[in-house]
Image: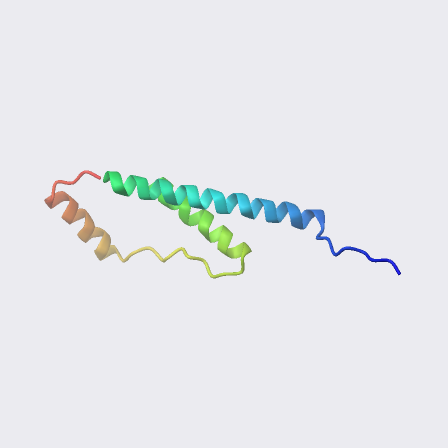
Length: 90
């Protein structure tokens, strides 16, 4: 009787490692977004990068994408008016 271990393929190990690295990147990007928010800044490229990486990780883990649809135009315009009236430059 021969006992053979049930080992995953090498390709699966590489994909698992890539997903782990993406998960770590997602966590670091989330910390960066929170840091910018705490400092009173809004940095769109960092927020978009976080959303993209979170969507990729969710796809590999079999979950729906956490990326919400863009806000309606009236909300965007209201936010711009508020920032202009409150003299905020972030």
